[in-house]
Image (cartoon, rainbow, N blue to C red):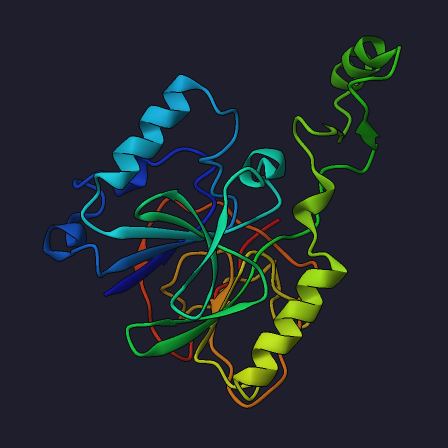
Length: 243
């Protein structure tokens, strides 16, 4: 079985048995995919390590792609290895970061992963914590309700895929003949997903998770959504969320 969800932001209450009873029949050979904004690797503290240990104790394997709310400095400290056809980072033995631009084989299906997305709450800028007037800037921006973040504390340039990641994606898709069963991303292209409308037939929680075959997929900025449910994977469906 494969289930999907999104935007956990370090809060994993939805994986409690009372909210996700399907897990009682799952094993480590079954998967739950978090489609971005996992947030489980954020501050590196003791409480966070305990939460990750609890995730490892879940009966299933937890997979995630990156979103635009991840601590990419901490993620970069984990070694990269090959797994099921693509590259990963093991946060725990069964808590796995699926890197960008990869094609994985899971339960007889192919999954193309392209995490990341551009933050939409930085209209007023990115503050440097090393600036002499950082404290004054920060307090002022907070007082006026500005849309801003702090570099390497709440924002990382790595939120957007690099040119190298796009090149790796193209190579992986070429090897797959540009045909995959599913695409896992955090922010779908705007021309595919209308962020203001939720598709009525959708059962997979946002962010976007959709199926395309025989066509060269693209990845750009789009929408993100916060969901508190976990849904089963179905073909020929996609999700749209809200900004």
